[in-house]
Amino acid sequence: MSEAERASGDVTSSKSKPVTAAEENFGVRARNISIGYTIRGRSEPFVAVAEATFDVRPSEMVCIVGPSGCGKSTVLSAVAGLMPVRSGSLAVNGRPVTGPAADRAVVFQKASLLPWMTVEDNAAYGLRSYGTAKSVARERAHELLAIVGLSNFAKSYPYQLSGGMQQRTNLARALAADPKLLLFDEPFASLDAQQREMLQAELMRIWADTDKAGLFITHQIDEAVLLGNRVLVSTKGPASHITNAIEIDLPWPRTRNTRLHPDFNGYVEHIWSLLAAEQV
Ligand code: ADP
Ligand code: MG
Image (cartoon, rainbow, N blue to C red; front, side, top):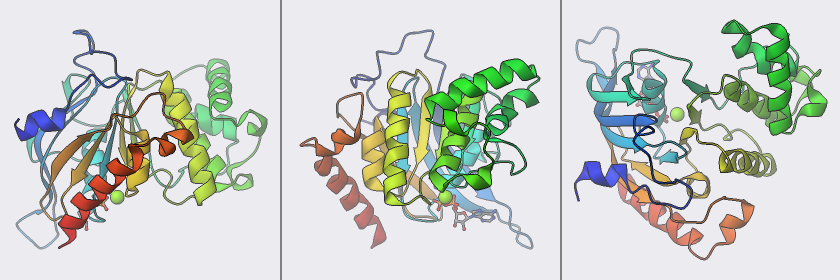
């Protein structure tokens, strides 16, 4: 099996229904992408990611783990359309990525809420900026706040919320425009353990009945195994590449109890050993 085939993985895991021809174009298709930063005063760019090949198919969640600085955020920025790829090909929902677009939304580690707006207005903000009428945007915001468990806080301001609740609002905002692809850059990394588990559970519940595709970056292996259809393991940088795509064949829907599945720790250990081999 070639590296590319391995990275694409198999689509027969129990959540992802077989992908139909109509759906084939949706999701992410990255082939040998390399991404670099221009450094002032240097003629050569700093190559952060030299070779990344992977797919994210509709309704799949694909996680990327790797050592700090290996280029995870860089890959996510490229998929978001915030950074160009220097070589290789990158398509989202069947079209080459040329910049940010409404078909994808990013959830960053830090909830970037507008402090002077209420939770409902923050949730509706994206929709309003796309020209949705205020009443429609607000109604949709309320639906989303119900989904993320924040109905009672619609009129609160971000400073009145815990970190976990701010991140729920952020998630509601990302879901508002109904993007086909959600990109997560360590969204729960700065939360305490209990809030992180609650947010993971919330995301798993939302994910159980969505056909969206997700790319989820984390440095926590157990989080990747819990949430992902597949886990991509990045080598350390610079010029990192994605070495392994591990199919996580645990039952769907995923819940907190998935951690108790007899195969769960085996996956965690396997990925841990791949990462440990990277450190030497
Ligand atoms: P990760 O998210 O895996 O921790 P990043 O994608 O943030 O890693 O960074 C990958 C590499 O690119 C690192 O070596 C980092 O120092 C470098 N890098 C990140 N952002 C910039 C930038 N704006 N300019 C130059 N180098 C950068
Ligand atoms: Mg990062």
